[in-house]
Length: 74
Image (tube, rainbow, N blue to C red; front, side, top):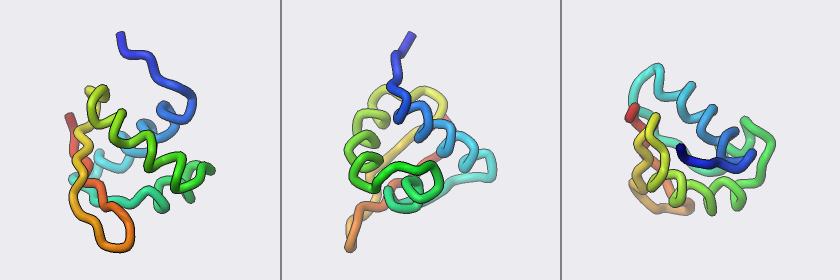
C-alpha cells in the first residue's frame, strides 16, 4: 500500500474530485488556493504523486508562466 503525506492526501482528494467531471488541466496555484497550501508546496509534490498515485493519472503538460498538469482518472 502506498504511503502518502497529509499534503499529498489533500492534493489527491482535490484531483480525484476534479476528474470525476472529466479530464482536467490545472496549475499548482489553482490547487493550492483550493486546499490551503502554497503553489510551491503543491508543485513540488505533483511529480512524486504522478509516479505513485493509482486513482488519477498526472502528467506534466505545458509550461508557460507556470506548469500546467493534465489530470485524468487512473
